[in-house]
Length: 216
Length: 155
Image 1 (cartoon, chains in turn cyan, blue):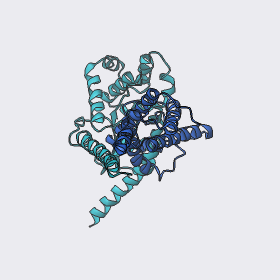
Image 2: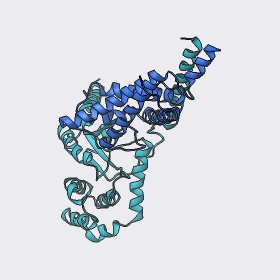
Image 3: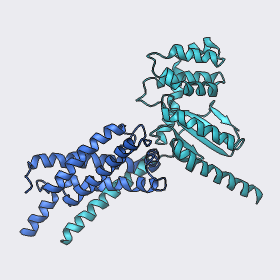
Image 4: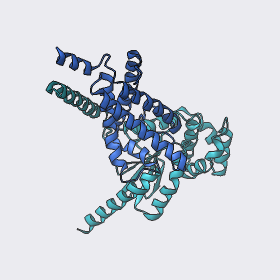
């Protein structure tokens, strides 16, 4: 094989590597560059816990529904030590997601985000097959104990839609590409399988480091 | 005796498969690797210990095979590598379906850019496997870097 031929191959691969590294420089997710919504009404667990699990989730996504069991298990295993922060990440491929997220955000404004969140996931197979689920969402609001007049007015409030988009933009800035995506103190885990393995391991390690730090 | 196929068909096949591999490798290599690792973790058949390695290596293999196919460098090797990659995706998805093992909703092949279901990607990868094996057997030289080097050696 002649030297020029080999050198050409090496140069092609070097150019390719350079292009990827250059593109990575400009597209790497950065916590500092991404603006997290200033106040979140969607926090579960101890607000001052050492470990934060950020959840980017879509209400129409079946994998997100399945991940709820793992989230509940973590909260049960680490009471007072972990907090979950929910971010809306409605996927464009899900037709009913925008209205479901708007309904959940309206519940958050009345301080009932998590019960409404649970209801949406528990009943996912019911409302996702309806042409127009608004009536169903109002019914869930009634069952969750929300002020129905406020809830109904909120469903078409563009400011609420903007807040949801802020969450979505935050996820985009972190290069979230699928749901559910979790960040355990900034480290990314995708799907309930990864959360159950790597995520739980990371939580344990963080808490261990914290207890060692506190003891010394 | 292998019947020769039109060089224009081979050129289109090279650009199609090479372009697809370049695109899918590029998206995965530039995005955080955890995105692809997360999708792989949802394939029940893949051992958990292997998913981080696969998620790191496959995008670079796709990029290299894709680039070499497009420019026509080391074509038989590039075509064989692409065929093996497509073939392994076909095997993974087909075996998962056959054994009833879990598969993700979206294959994760093109990162967040395009979301295809495992069935859609199965069809695409079967097509790509056929095309790349054809390229491997045909060893076309039309508009390839390989041909330039053969010419310069003969001159």
